[in-house]
Every structure is written in C-alpha cells, then in structure tokens.
Image 1 (cartoon, one colour):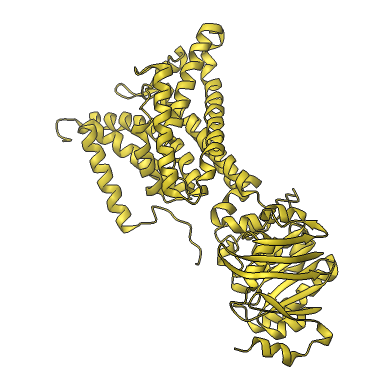
Image 2 (tube, rainbow over the protein chains, first blue to last red):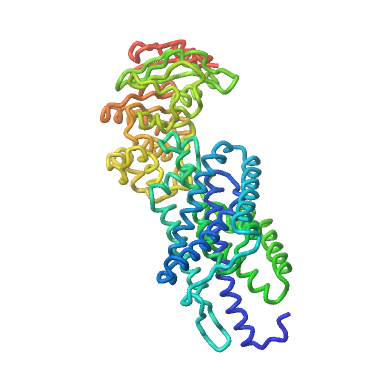
Amino acid sequence: MLSGYTASELLSIFAMQGFAGLSLFSVFLLMALGLAVIFGQMGVINMAHGEFMILGAYTTYVTSNLFQAYAPGLFPIYFFVAVAVSFIAAGALGALVEWAVIRHLYSRPLDTLLATWGLSLILQQVYRSIFGAKEVTVILPDWMMGALQVTDSIEIPINGLIVLVLTLIVTVFMWAVMFRSRLGVQLRAVVLNRPMAGAVGINTALVDRITFSFGCGIAGIAGCAFTMIGSTGPTAGQLYIVDTFLVVVFGGAGTLIGTICSAFGIAQAQSVMEFFMSGSMAKVITLLIVVGILMIRPQGLFSVKVRK
Amino acid sequence: MLELRKFKAGYGESVVIPGMDLSIANGEIVALLGRNGMGKTTLMKSVMGVIRPLGGECLLEGEDVTNLKSFERVRKGMAFVPQGRMIFGSMTVAENIQTGLTVTGEREIPEDLYRLFPILKEFRKRRGGNLSGGQQQQLAIARALASNPKLLLLDEPTEGIQPSIIKDMAKVLRQIRDERGLAIFVSEQVLSFALDVADRIVVMERGSIVYDQMRDETDANVVSGFLSV
C-alpha cells in the first residue's frame, strides 16, 4: 500500500496525517480525561459523555452566531469565550444530572449505565428539536482559518495548533487540580477508599458532584475543539464515545500519563492509517492491536505500583 | 465526652449490638476487649457513622450525632483509625495526612504530628502503600490526629504489628492523650496492650458489655477468662 509514493511524498503524508491526528488526539484526550476522572471517582460509566461534548460544540456554535450578530467587532476572539461558556454549560448540566439522577444510583453500576444511556438519547432528541437534524458548521474567524506552509508539500492548519495548545493547557490544569490542590487530595482519597475518606472528614457526596460536573465541563471543552475537526450534529457524540472508552481502558485507569499516551497512540494510528485504507479498516486494525495489548497487559499501559 | 444510650447497631436485619449503654469521660482512655465476632468492629464503625446505627442514641459532648454522616462527625471532633489501617495506598505519606486536614482548612501539616512520628517526615514523599505495617499504623494515627479530634477511636491497632512496637504504641497513645487532652476509645484483643494503655477496661460479649472496671481495679485473670476461647 505504501508503493506508488516517493519517499518525500510519504514524509509529507505522514507529517500532515500526523498533524491531523494531533487534532483527533486533542479531542480524544479531553474526552478521556473527563470520562476517566468520573469513572475512577464514582465507578460511573457515563454513556452520555459524548452528548456533553456535543453540548459544548453547540454552545460554541451559538456563541459564534451571537458574536456575529451582536458584536462583530469581537468576533475574532469569540472562540476563547466559547471555551469558557462551553465548560460552564456542560459542567452545570453535569451537576444537575448528578443531583437529579446519578447520586441515587451509586453502587448500582448497571443502572447508571442504563440511566446515562437514556440520558444520551434524551439529549440527542433535545439537540434535534432545537438545532434540527442537519449538521451545523461553526464559522471560524479569518485568523484561525489559514495554514502554516512548512515546506512545499507540508501545511499545518492554524486551528489545529490552537486546539492542541488548548488541550495542553487543560491537561496541565487537570494535573494541577489532581496532584497539587486540596480538592485533588480529597478526590483521590475518595477514589481509593470511599468509606475511609468519609471517616477522615471528607464530604464524599460533595466531592462526587464537583468531580462529575468537572468531568462533564472538560467534555464541553472537548466539544469546542471538536467543532474544528468535524461538523456538529445531534448524534456526532456517539461516534466518539466508543473510541474514548478505548482510550481510557488502554491507558490504564487512574493514570494521567497513561491516558495521554493511549490517546496519542490511538489517534495517530487511526489518522495515519486512514490515509492508506478505508476508515473502518483503520479502526479494525487499531482495535485488534489494542485488544492484543490488553490481553497481555489487562491493567492497561500504565498502572500505579504499590504493594497490596 | 461520648455517651451511648440503648445504642443499637448491625447490618440490616442482623443486629449485632442489641442495645448498649456506655459513657466515656473527657480525657479518658477506654480499652474495649472481646473475642473475635463479639461486635467490637461493628460498634466502632457505627459510632463513627461508617455504618448507620440502627437505633438508640450516640451523644458527643451532649450533642446528638446518631444520624450524622461520618464526615460530619469528624467536624464535631471524632477521628477514626480503622482495623487494617486503611491508609490511601497510592497517595504519598504527606497527602495521606492532608486528607485529615480537610475539616480544619489548614494546608500545612502541623509540625507536632511529625514530632510524634519522625519516620513520617522522613518518608513523607513515599507512597503510603509502600510503608511497613507499623509505619502505616503511625500514618493512620497521624491522619486521624490531623483533624484535631476530641475523641479518637482506634479499632484493633495492634493487629499485625510486631510485639516490640506494640509497647511503643501504648506509650505514644498515652503521650497523645496527655498532650492534647483527648479521649481515646480503643478496641483490642491483646490484653497486655490494653492494660498498658487504658485507664479503664471494658469487655464485650455478644454485643453487650459484661465487664467494666478502672484499670487499677482490673483483675487480669478475670479479663483473660473472657478472652480465652
């Protein structure tokens, strides 16, 4: 399959597909961070995580339209406002969902799975009713549209760079919250031993709500990034949820570095292979490799070592 | 400090403690002895709110805490060192102690905790799960003390600890009581430790108290009779 290309063509293909893979990596990573922190914290598999992402995407879409209509002068910087608004919108919905549904279903993993799946269907229909079944595209300001011409045959899109930087900032922020803040200490204590965390004075119910809302908020930011690599539709989130689960499991639950490496590996493998074969074939091969590795290392790529 | 009235505890339908009356004075160290399966851990857990009490009353300094969650009890001044220590294994020693600071709002670990347990300062960056059993026990006590409790509950602190360290532990617990003036309620199976540490000895059998004497009036032979199988 590689025959028929010259060496320099191949280099360009790998560089550009690799860069496209970085945008995919950004979305995967942002999604997986939220999903992993919620799963690790509460054992809740959030089937509606993709819909929280799409909420972020629609929020970005609405924000961009509002800026165009009411503040065209500020349109060039609307994206940064959209990031914050998406985080808040998805986080607020997350807090509401946790309060209304999830907290009644802790210690019933199968029920939370069904409940969040139902929630995802409800949200999809809500999006369909409000925005229509047709996919919408977010208009980017001019300065984010172009590409950097690295060599004659390699172009790097600017919006991809912005998404990447955004992802790095969110990841570092997340790391700081988890490992350098008091909330992080409480959060990890609840993950490790919930009854004991309560017995040292941690309000576990409050920590749960904050975590769920925080994870959903990060999914909202993922949605913001998503508007740059795909068009936003009511069911677009469904396409990403499976890949995101794959990233979380492959990386090993509870390790940030594992999630990053696994998101990177899966995104790059898919992106580069998609150029040479069909998208579904690329997915099949990625899945086979991941399944193979997980059979040898069921705990995922990285896991914390302590004596049991 | 602590008062139990007709306190009833157990797991759902199975009642382990049918109705217990017990009170612990300010600054008193009370050792609760009893064989396996007599309800010591159930009593400790339900006084701490880790499992929900089934009935009766639990008063802390005269205030009813029977229906509070465990984190609220910590706020009121209780702290708990559970059986098996239950430290947070993948977190560092310092972070483990910080979890106990949640209710005080402090950020820095008080220096006097490190003075009590110097080994914890040396190992503060290690993962708690990689400490030895005795060191983990010190960590669990330090974590409990971090919330500045008025009443410290310990559930079988000597379990799985070397005999030479058990003697030190009794000394440290008395030192903590003398310095901080808190009350200590400790469940035990090792009679010699209980006699070393406590002001008062209480024996529990099938969920009820069958013996209650001050340390100095305690007849070790009678108590060991309760403990032998």
